[in-house]
Image 1: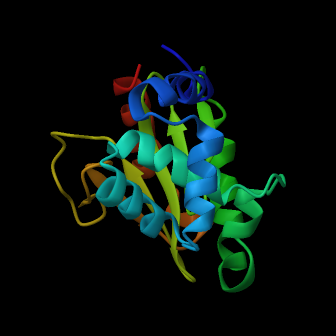
Image 2: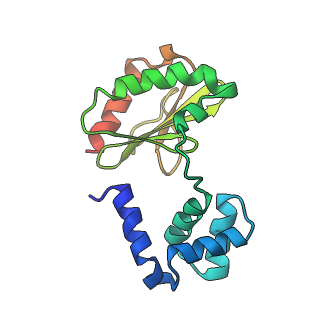
Length: 179
């Protein structure tokens, strides 16, 4: 399976053939629009230029890149959410015991992948991390809640102590199913 970086390179290489413009031309268009939010740029490219979601999403992301390396995890757990960093660290310490995983920080969450995504760590509020898990078919419990399309279930974590054997077993099960 190609890495996300390889897939992005392929999309950029195919951009001119599929849209009529190469990436530098699209970046001029998006920057000239004056739009500053990803969703606004995405909508403009799809609506005004008939672009598919994949290309529009990639161009919007490239438009907003600053060229600076940013520690996305540090940003997520700064300010009001700083007290959640030990919970995140405890999750990552446990997850690193699994083989062949990719820990991929994003702007608002951290994706955990094997062959496919099996979990998503999101500092949802200043007092809670939502641990999304790909556990389709598992029963809902008082702790293992129904979640969304990306992750079928979630566990709400507020303290390091919340990462008990139940949470570790659910993480392990999601990891095993992603292999």
